[in-house]
Image (tube, rainbow, N blue to C red; front, side, top):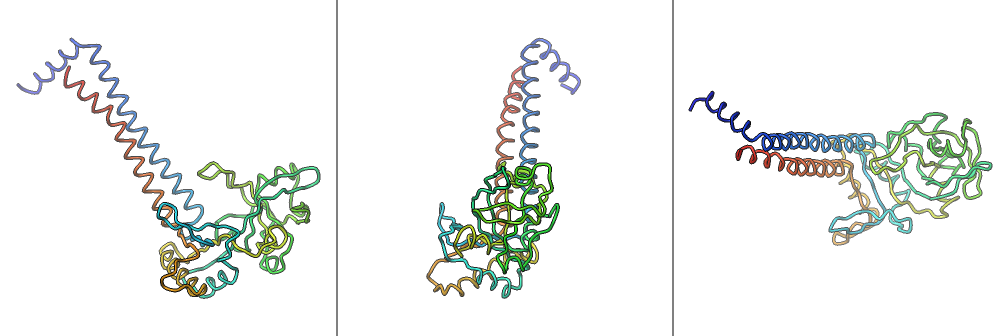
Length: 303
């Protein structure tokens, strides 16, 4: 039987079973569309996560106070009550770790910000003057506070777009005064808009002040929760992670059999984990959609 005869027989079978053939073709069309859609969704999600990570910085490391085991994985608690990460530790990291370029501490306090009759509840994050460079976040207007502001615990504040629009609608916030915990703070800058993160949280609903000011005026505690460390390059992140771990263990006088009382994570590991998860989901969705193709193919074989 030649090819032309096979095609004729196939068309005759299809014409004799028009309804079955139409339904089978519909199944194939839906199956192909589903495969394309699912793969596209998976790749889009992966690209979104990757873009989010790259906007933060692939050479970024996180140093957290304390450590805990979650499902066998060690992670920092970031607990303000854990006194295992100090400003001296961070100074030592910047001074003694050659693979590190910048370091900024971070302490968070949820507080009510008041300006005239307007008030807004947000997170006030205490950092140093290097934060915008470490986190790759630019200033829209005004300026970020300086090293002198950090050293003197100055009452200056930089606000996000959401906070600015809520407290100073239609006016320029620069130079204005707002109150945090009944203490006056002068607005020196407004951050550029960042929008929502991958979890849908508003990244512009935030305010920044010198970490020394937040410790003294808001928290009343010298403890640090977390530090953001920028390695000299993405390739240097693992070296920096190892060097930071060795340095902190030495500074904290931990013996060889004692666990770390801190946690160091790097963005490369987080990016790799996110990509692996996205790849797994893409493959799974494509396999599920491919089942309809298989069913449609079996239907064609039985016409």
